[in-house]
Image (cartoon, rainbow, N blue to C red; front, side, top):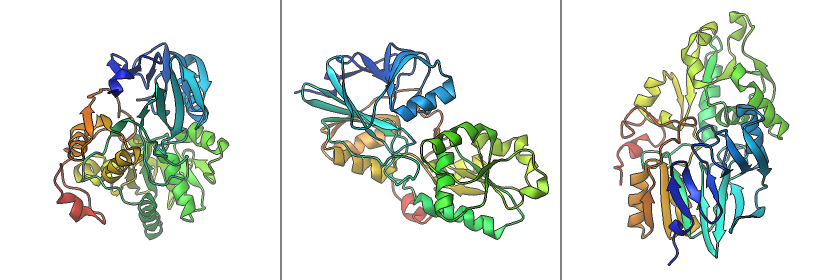
Length: 361
Protein backbone atom coordinates (compact mmCIF):
# COMPACT_ATOMS: atom_id res chain seq x y z
CA UNK A 1 0.00 0.00 0.00
CA UNK A 2 1.35 3.41 -0.94
CA UNK A 3 1.65 6.14 1.65
CA UNK A 4 2.68 9.78 1.89
CA UNK A 5 6.18 8.62 2.81
CA UNK A 6 6.61 7.36 -0.77
CA UNK A 7 6.32 10.99 -1.91
CA UNK A 8 7.35 13.18 1.04
CA UNK A 9 10.11 13.07 3.61
CA UNK A 10 11.49 15.44 6.22
CA UNK A 11 14.98 16.88 6.16
CA UNK A 12 16.69 19.91 7.67
CA UNK A 13 14.86 22.25 5.27
CA UNK A 14 11.43 20.74 5.91
CA UNK A 15 9.08 18.83 3.57
CA UNK A 16 10.91 17.30 0.61
CA UNK A 17 9.35 15.59 -2.41
CA UNK A 18 12.00 13.12 -3.57
CA UNK A 19 10.38 12.01 -6.89
CA UNK A 20 9.88 15.70 -7.74
CA UNK A 21 13.21 16.93 -6.41
CA UNK A 22 11.79 19.97 -4.59
CA UNK A 23 10.84 21.26 -1.15
CA UNK A 24 7.55 22.88 -0.16
CA UNK A 25 7.89 26.04 1.97
CA UNK A 26 11.50 25.20 2.90
CA UNK A 27 12.92 26.80 6.03
CA UNK A 28 16.41 27.22 4.61
CA UNK A 29 17.77 27.87 1.09
CA UNK A 30 17.28 24.91 -1.32
CA UNK A 31 17.73 24.25 -5.03
CA UNK A 32 14.02 24.08 -5.92
CA UNK A 33 11.07 25.26 -3.84
CA UNK A 34 7.33 25.51 -4.16
CA UNK A 35 5.98 28.26 -1.90
CA UNK A 36 2.36 28.23 -0.72
CA UNK A 37 2.03 31.92 0.22
CA UNK A 38 3.92 35.08 1.02
CA UNK A 39 4.12 35.09 4.84
CA UNK A 40 7.72 35.17 5.97
CA UNK A 41 7.59 31.86 7.83
CA UNK A 42 6.72 30.10 4.56
CA UNK A 43 8.33 32.35 1.93
CA UNK A 44 12.01 32.69 2.63
CA UNK A 45 14.63 34.16 0.26
CA UNK A 46 17.73 32.45 -1.11
CA UNK A 47 16.32 29.49 -3.07
CA UNK A 48 17.56 28.53 -6.53
CA UNK A 49 14.18 28.20 -8.27
CA UNK A 50 10.84 29.19 -6.75
CA UNK A 51 7.45 28.17 -8.14
CA UNK A 52 4.32 29.80 -6.74
CA UNK A 53 1.32 31.80 -7.85
CA UNK A 54 2.06 35.07 -9.61
CA UNK A 55 0.74 36.98 -6.59
CA UNK A 56 2.95 35.12 -4.13
CA UNK A 57 6.03 35.70 -6.30
CA UNK A 58 5.21 39.42 -6.44
CA UNK A 59 4.70 39.56 -2.66
CA UNK A 60 8.07 37.85 -2.12
CA UNK A 61 9.70 40.45 -4.36
CA UNK A 62 8.08 43.27 -2.37
CA UNK A 63 9.12 41.84 0.97
CA UNK A 64 12.50 40.28 0.15
CA UNK A 65 13.67 42.24 -2.89
CA UNK A 66 13.63 41.39 -6.61
CA UNK A 67 16.64 39.09 -6.18
CA UNK A 68 14.93 36.84 -3.61
CA UNK A 69 15.72 33.73 -5.69
CA UNK A 70 17.74 32.57 -8.69
CA UNK A 71 14.73 32.22 -10.97
CA UNK A 72 10.98 32.04 -10.55
CA UNK A 73 8.07 30.26 -12.19
CA UNK A 74 4.50 31.51 -11.89
CA UNK A 75 1.74 28.89 -11.74
CA UNK A 76 -1.96 29.62 -12.17
CA UNK A 77 -4.56 27.89 -10.02
CA UNK A 78 -5.53 24.62 -11.71
CA UNK A 79 -2.51 24.57 -14.03
CA UNK A 80 -0.68 21.22 -13.92
CA UNK A 81 3.06 21.09 -14.54
CA UNK A 82 5.50 18.22 -14.58
CA UNK A 83 8.31 18.50 -12.02
CA UNK A 84 10.70 15.56 -12.00
CA UNK A 85 8.53 12.45 -11.80
CA UNK A 86 5.44 14.17 -10.35
CA UNK A 87 2.62 16.41 -11.54
CA UNK A 88 2.03 19.56 -9.50
CA UNK A 89 -1.17 21.63 -9.40
CA UNK A 90 -1.98 24.62 -7.18
CA UNK A 91 -5.43 25.24 -5.72
CA UNK A 92 -6.70 28.26 -3.71
CA UNK A 93 -6.09 28.10 0.04
CA UNK A 94 -8.22 31.13 1.01
CA UNK A 95 -5.51 32.32 3.43
CA UNK A 96 -4.18 35.53 1.81
CA UNK A 97 -3.93 36.87 -1.74
CA UNK A 98 -2.17 34.26 -3.91
CA UNK A 99 -2.14 31.53 -1.25
CA UNK A 100 -2.24 27.98 -2.57
CA UNK A 101 -2.49 24.34 -1.65
CA UNK A 102 -0.06 22.06 -3.50
CA UNK A 103 -1.39 18.86 -5.10
CA UNK A 104 1.37 16.36 -5.92
CA UNK A 105 0.43 13.35 -8.07
CA UNK A 106 2.84 10.44 -8.35
CA UNK A 107 1.91 7.18 -10.05
CA UNK A 108 -1.76 7.74 -9.27
CA UNK A 109 -1.16 8.65 -5.59
CA UNK A 110 -2.37 12.13 -4.62
CA UNK A 111 -0.88 14.21 -1.80
CA UNK A 112 -2.11 17.70 -0.91
CA UNK A 113 -0.01 20.09 1.18
CA UNK A 114 -2.39 22.75 2.46
CA UNK A 115 0.01 25.45 3.61
CA UNK A 116 -2.10 27.78 5.79
CA UNK A 117 -5.78 27.97 4.91
CA UNK A 118 -9.24 29.10 5.96
CA UNK A 119 -12.73 28.40 4.68
CA UNK A 120 -14.48 31.57 5.79
CA UNK A 121 -15.24 34.03 3.01
CA UNK A 122 -12.53 36.63 2.44
CA UNK A 123 -13.14 39.44 -0.08
CA UNK A 124 -9.39 39.85 -0.65
CA UNK A 125 -8.47 36.41 -2.00
CA UNK A 126 -9.76 33.37 -3.88
CA UNK A 127 -11.93 31.01 -1.84
CA UNK A 128 -10.53 27.76 -0.44
CA UNK A 129 -11.23 24.66 -2.52
CA UNK A 130 -11.16 21.22 -0.86
CA UNK A 131 -9.17 18.80 -3.02
CA UNK A 132 -9.72 15.04 -2.91
CA UNK A 133 -6.52 13.18 -2.14
CA UNK A 134 -5.01 10.05 -0.60
CA UNK A 135 -2.85 11.94 1.90
CA UNK A 136 -3.37 15.43 3.32
CA UNK A 137 -0.82 17.63 5.07
CA UNK A 138 -2.74 20.11 7.18
CA UNK A 139 -1.81 23.05 9.35
CA UNK A 140 -3.11 23.02 12.93
CA UNK A 141 -2.73 26.59 14.20
CA UNK A 142 -6.14 26.58 15.90
CA UNK A 143 -6.65 22.84 16.27
CA UNK A 144 -8.45 22.81 19.60
CA UNK A 145 -12.24 22.78 20.09
CA UNK A 146 -11.98 26.06 22.03
CA UNK A 147 -11.17 27.79 18.76
CA UNK A 148 -14.40 28.44 16.92
CA UNK A 149 -14.07 31.74 15.08
CA UNK A 150 -17.11 34.01 14.86
CA UNK A 151 -17.90 35.58 11.46
CA UNK A 152 -15.26 38.21 10.71
CA UNK A 153 -17.91 40.61 9.40
CA UNK A 154 -19.48 40.65 12.86
CA UNK A 155 -16.15 41.49 14.49
CA UNK A 156 -15.64 44.39 12.09
CA UNK A 157 -19.20 45.46 12.90
CA UNK A 158 -18.16 45.74 16.56
CA UNK A 159 -15.22 47.90 15.51
CA UNK A 160 -17.41 50.28 13.50
CA UNK A 161 -19.97 50.45 16.31
CA UNK A 162 -17.22 51.51 18.71
CA UNK A 163 -16.04 54.10 16.21
CA UNK A 164 -19.54 55.58 16.09
CA UNK A 165 -19.90 55.47 19.89
CA UNK A 166 -16.60 57.24 20.59
CA UNK A 167 -16.13 59.86 17.84
CA UNK A 168 -13.62 61.74 19.96
CA UNK A 169 -11.20 58.78 20.02
CA UNK A 170 -9.01 57.29 17.29
CA UNK A 171 -9.34 53.52 16.78
CA UNK A 172 -6.02 51.75 16.23
CA UNK A 173 -6.33 48.23 14.81
CA UNK A 174 -3.24 46.04 15.05
CA UNK A 175 -3.32 43.74 12.02
CA UNK A 176 -0.56 41.80 10.27
CA UNK A 177 0.66 43.67 7.22
CA UNK A 178 0.04 40.90 4.68
CA UNK A 179 -3.53 39.71 4.43
CA UNK A 180 -5.10 40.62 7.75
CA UNK A 181 -4.76 44.40 7.30
CA UNK A 182 -6.27 44.32 3.80
CA UNK A 183 -9.05 41.99 4.93
CA UNK A 184 -10.06 44.28 7.80
CA UNK A 185 -10.09 47.26 5.43
CA UNK A 186 -12.15 45.40 2.80
CA UNK A 187 -14.67 44.18 5.40
CA UNK A 188 -15.02 47.72 6.76
CA UNK A 189 -15.78 48.92 3.21
CA UNK A 190 -18.37 46.18 2.77
CA UNK A 191 -19.98 47.32 6.03
CA UNK A 192 -20.36 50.83 4.62
CA UNK A 193 -17.36 52.65 6.10
CA UNK A 194 -16.44 54.91 3.18
CA UNK A 195 -14.34 57.53 5.00
CA UNK A 196 -10.57 57.52 4.41
CA UNK A 197 -8.79 54.85 6.48
CA UNK A 198 -5.37 55.80 7.80
CA UNK A 199 -2.57 53.27 7.44
CA UNK A 200 0.88 52.88 8.95
CA UNK A 201 3.73 53.28 6.48
CA UNK A 202 4.62 49.58 6.80
CA UNK A 203 1.33 48.67 5.09
CA UNK A 204 1.61 51.02 2.14
CA UNK A 205 3.35 48.81 -0.46
CA UNK A 206 1.21 45.75 0.21
CA UNK A 207 -2.03 47.73 0.20
CA UNK A 208 -1.08 49.28 -3.12
CA UNK A 209 -0.22 45.82 -4.46
CA UNK A 210 -3.60 44.43 -3.41
CA UNK A 211 -5.36 47.26 -5.20
CA UNK A 212 -3.25 46.73 -8.33
CA UNK A 213 -4.24 43.06 -8.18
CA UNK A 214 -7.92 44.02 -8.28
CA UNK A 215 -8.82 44.14 -4.58
CA UNK A 216 -10.54 47.51 -3.92
CA UNK A 217 -9.67 49.02 -0.53
CA UNK A 218 -11.20 52.50 -0.88
CA UNK A 219 -9.47 55.75 0.09
CA UNK A 220 -6.33 55.12 2.16
CA UNK A 221 -4.20 57.89 3.63
CA UNK A 222 -0.96 57.95 5.63
CA UNK A 223 -1.40 58.11 9.39
CA UNK A 224 1.60 60.39 9.87
CA UNK A 225 1.97 64.14 9.34
CA UNK A 226 -1.34 65.12 10.92
CA UNK A 227 -2.40 67.22 13.88
CA UNK A 228 -3.53 65.19 16.87
CA UNK A 229 -6.94 66.87 16.85
CA UNK A 230 -7.48 65.82 13.23
CA UNK A 231 -7.07 62.16 14.17
CA UNK A 232 -10.17 61.99 16.37
CA UNK A 233 -12.74 59.54 15.07
CA UNK A 234 -10.32 58.01 12.56
CA UNK A 235 -9.92 54.32 11.81
CA UNK A 236 -6.21 53.49 11.72
CA UNK A 237 -4.67 50.16 10.63
CA UNK A 238 -1.12 49.39 11.74
CA UNK A 239 1.19 46.46 12.55
CA UNK A 240 0.38 44.96 15.97
CA UNK A 241 3.66 46.13 17.48
CA UNK A 242 2.90 49.76 16.58
CA UNK A 243 -0.06 49.86 18.97
CA UNK A 244 2.36 49.53 21.87
CA UNK A 245 5.19 51.86 20.90
CA UNK A 246 5.73 55.63 20.78
CA UNK A 247 4.06 55.82 17.35
CA UNK A 248 0.66 55.29 19.01
CA UNK A 249 1.03 58.32 21.29
CA UNK A 250 0.20 60.72 18.47
CA UNK A 251 -3.46 59.62 18.51
CA UNK A 252 -6.12 61.13 20.80
CA UNK A 253 -7.16 58.69 23.55
CA UNK A 254 -6.87 55.73 21.18
CA UNK A 255 -9.03 52.62 21.41
CA UNK A 256 -6.56 49.80 20.82
CA UNK A 257 -7.88 46.83 18.89
CA UNK A 258 -6.08 43.70 17.70
CA UNK A 259 -7.36 41.45 14.89
CA UNK A 260 -6.26 37.86 15.48
CA UNK A 261 -7.68 34.42 16.14
CA UNK A 262 -5.76 34.47 19.42
CA UNK A 263 -8.09 37.21 20.68
CA UNK A 264 -10.37 34.30 21.58
CA UNK A 265 -8.07 33.84 24.59
CA UNK A 266 -8.48 36.33 27.43
CA UNK A 267 -4.83 36.15 28.47
CA UNK A 268 -3.66 36.74 24.93
CA UNK A 269 -5.93 39.79 24.54
CA UNK A 270 -4.62 41.22 27.83
CA UNK A 271 -1.04 40.54 26.78
CA UNK A 272 -1.61 42.38 23.49
CA UNK A 273 -3.11 45.33 25.37
CA UNK A 274 -6.27 45.06 23.30
CA UNK A 275 -9.11 47.18 24.64
CA UNK A 276 -11.19 45.87 21.75
CA UNK A 277 -10.18 42.29 20.84
CA UNK A 278 -11.35 41.28 17.36
CA UNK A 279 -11.45 37.52 16.73
CA UNK A 280 -10.48 37.59 13.06
CA UNK A 281 -8.24 34.84 11.79
CA UNK A 282 -6.88 33.80 8.41
CA UNK A 283 -6.56 30.22 9.65
CA UNK A 284 -9.21 27.51 9.80
CA UNK A 285 -10.82 26.98 13.18
CA UNK A 286 -11.42 23.60 14.80
CA UNK A 287 -14.66 22.87 12.94
CA UNK A 288 -13.23 23.84 9.57
CA UNK A 289 -10.06 21.80 10.10
CA UNK A 290 -12.15 18.69 10.81
CA UNK A 291 -14.56 19.39 7.95
CA UNK A 292 -11.69 19.87 5.53
CA UNK A 293 -10.05 16.58 6.45
CA UNK A 294 -13.34 14.78 5.82
CA UNK A 295 -13.88 16.65 2.53
CA UNK A 296 -10.49 15.56 1.18
CA UNK A 297 -11.42 11.90 1.82
CA UNK A 298 -7.77 11.37 2.72
CA UNK A 299 -6.89 8.05 4.35
CA UNK A 300 -3.70 9.53 5.80
CA UNK A 301 -3.15 12.94 7.43
CA UNK A 302 0.06 14.65 8.46
CA UNK A 303 -0.43 17.50 10.94
CA UNK A 304 1.99 20.40 11.24
CA UNK A 305 2.68 23.77 12.91
CA UNK A 306 0.07 24.14 15.59
CA UNK A 307 -1.95 22.04 18.02
CA UNK A 308 -0.89 18.82 16.32
CA UNK A 309 -1.75 16.21 18.94
CA UNK A 310 -5.41 17.19 19.28
CA UNK A 311 -6.04 16.87 15.56
CA UNK A 312 -4.11 13.60 15.35
CA UNK A 313 -6.31 12.27 18.16
CA UNK A 314 -9.47 13.38 16.33
CA UNK A 315 -8.29 11.66 13.16
CA UNK A 316 -7.73 8.44 15.06
CA UNK A 317 -11.24 8.57 16.48
CA UNK A 318 -12.56 8.93 12.94
CA UNK A 319 -10.57 6.02 11.51
CA UNK A 320 -7.98 8.15 9.72
CA UNK A 321 -4.26 7.40 10.03
CA UNK A 322 -2.47 10.53 11.24
CA UNK A 323 0.88 11.67 12.57
CA UNK A 324 2.32 14.94 13.88
CA UNK A 325 5.29 16.38 12.02
CA UNK A 326 6.70 18.57 14.83
CA UNK A 327 8.14 20.99 12.28
CA UNK A 328 9.71 24.02 13.91
CA UNK A 329 9.90 27.40 12.22
CA UNK A 330 6.32 28.08 11.08
CA UNK A 331 3.81 30.41 12.68
CA UNK A 332 6.32 33.20 13.25
CA UNK A 333 4.30 35.90 11.55
CA UNK A 334 0.61 35.49 10.90
CA UNK A 335 -1.29 34.64 14.08
CA UNK A 336 1.96 33.70 15.80
CA UNK A 337 1.72 31.12 18.55
CA UNK A 338 0.44 32.48 21.85
CA UNK A 339 2.60 32.97 24.88
CA UNK A 340 -0.47 32.31 26.98
CA UNK A 341 -1.83 28.87 27.72
CA UNK A 342 -4.17 28.00 24.81
CA UNK A 343 -6.45 26.24 27.23
CA UNK A 344 -6.97 29.47 29.18
CA UNK A 345 -10.40 31.06 29.40
CA UNK A 346 -11.79 32.28 26.07
CA UNK A 347 -12.65 35.93 25.63
CA UNK A 348 -16.36 36.81 25.76
CA UNK A 349 -18.19 36.01 22.55
CA UNK A 350 -21.34 34.49 21.15
CA UNK A 351 -20.12 30.95 21.77
CA UNK A 352 -17.88 31.61 24.75
CA UNK A 353 -19.73 29.47 27.21
CA UNK A 354 -19.82 26.43 24.96
CA UNK A 355 -16.22 26.77 23.87
CA UNK A 356 -14.92 27.35 27.33
CA UNK A 357 -16.64 24.27 28.67
CA UNK A 358 -15.52 21.93 25.92
CA UNK A 359 -12.53 19.77 26.76
CA UNK A 360 -9.72 19.15 24.33
CA UNK A 361 -9.98 15.75 22.69
